Image (tube, rainbow, N blue to C red; front, side):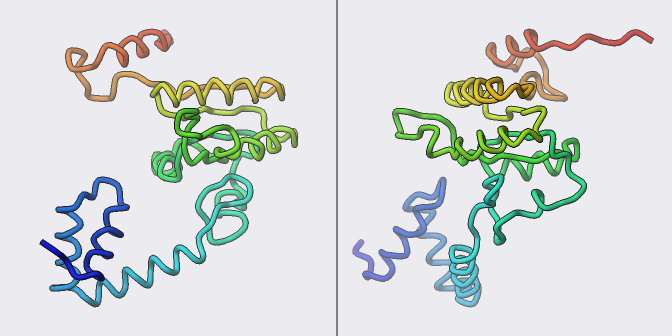
Amino acid sequence: MAYSPLLQQLLQALQCLPGVGSRTAQRMAFYLLQRDREGARELSVALQEAIEHIGECERCRMLSEEPLCRLCTASNRDVAMICVVESPADVIAIEESGVFRGLYFVLHGRLSPLDGIGPGELGLERFEARLSEGEVSEVILATSSTVEGEATAGYLATLAKEQNVAVSRIAHGVPIGGELEYVDRSTLSRAIAGRLGIASD
């Protein structure tokens, strides 16, 4: 079916969202136009405001409306520890766990030469500059366990060691409540290799 030009434009715009194909875009567009035009207006305004006013923190690259984000300006954070993550969503996940009180560095991706993503696209010159300031004593690498994530972690570890900064990697392994028979071979191998000792009473 041939859509009107404006409707076609809306459908194509909605498909920029992850996981949204032509059918889902059509459902979203029809819902907004038929049942919730006020919601559509609010969404449009919120998107426009976000695009115009949300950028990256100059220090950690977290999404922020200010030059420095709230985490980087908080007085109760441990400036000696930096956790390196792939996305702002990873920062939120770690913050919600409540177990980390240091600062972050957000890569907005991972090294992928085939996709044209190198150190420059990940802001690693800014990362090196932070390490050279001398405040950081440990870098925690929290990149994914994909091939690209592991390559990125290796590259970051080299940068940190060149600055004489200790490097650690988050543990990957069997999830809490998981049964071994359902865990894939790679995850199980990593869990065994990264096993921890149990202190005696």
